[in-house]
Length: 451
Image (tube, rainbow, N blue to C red):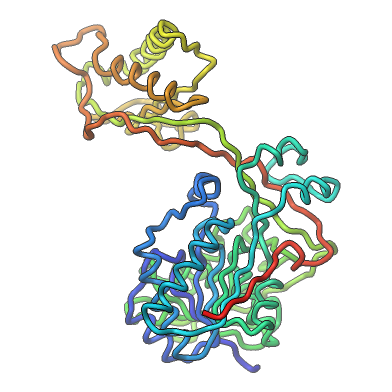
């Protein structure tokens, strides 16, 4: 094909987009419509809990409009990292939603589910083919056994295989964000370098535009370059907005490691082709010597409870460091009185208005705010202990005396009742490793169905 056009509806399925943007985008006759369904950005909880960080109501709205448009136009609709984290429960919830929408709207299509959750026994037998990322230790059997859920991040090959299998709607488990876009473009005969770069642009919808907001983006690949343009007339792609987004979520500004190779953007140029569209050229793709799949796994770290409060007392604010130090000691003593030693829990007090964002890295040490907020967090091996220690911490922060105290009641204002909020399971990332594979599709079985 001489050109290949793809339409991304938003950065994350469920973030929303203008329906008029979708209509205008579809009038440009794209060959593919799609959306990234998730990310590790919201943290490990959603992978561990098997839930989505977007509401079912908003996801259904976004997905319904996409399915209607794709079926009417006879083009593929591809969702990457389905359900927010791409595990098996996430994939199945998206499949159920697709069937529900089809039933309600009278739609028919061939659907492919690409599974990404990994078998622990299989991974345990291939430890010698794994390498750690993010300064983690080498992967071992104990870490695999402790994991609540492990997914592999697929490249474009399983998605292209699903297209070869005749699927019009593809729901992928955990996938590399640009892979869902690189797959149909490369399959259509476009060069890998601009196809991967197109994926980098499309993965977050209208983020490469100004003003930036969840919305649609069109990218057209032509030979050795691509053109980015938002369908919404209130937005523009400019060289600055596109170049700025090209730095998105990558440790290197120019080298983007993807499944199967490296996208090198060292010599990329950004040229306006209108007041709303930008041509991007000069990218290079180098295939990897060994194909690797990133593994992401989480394990249970404990149970958490929090409370939120604030003070406007200038006397307390003036001595807040000393007050919090004595507060921690009082909580330890009270917890010990009902049989909970300090080793059985961890407590953090985040001071909003002082260093809640950067903690120990905060260079401004003087407190200049007239009010401070506090988030007290307790993590323990079980919810009962977390709740009990948090109650002691909340009571102490609220009522403890301090030098020069003038108030005769509580030190804190609490915006919520109940004040103590049990958050349940806390997960942490325990597996960020790569696995060398001989077949890019082997870890990602595809299941087809007629909907």
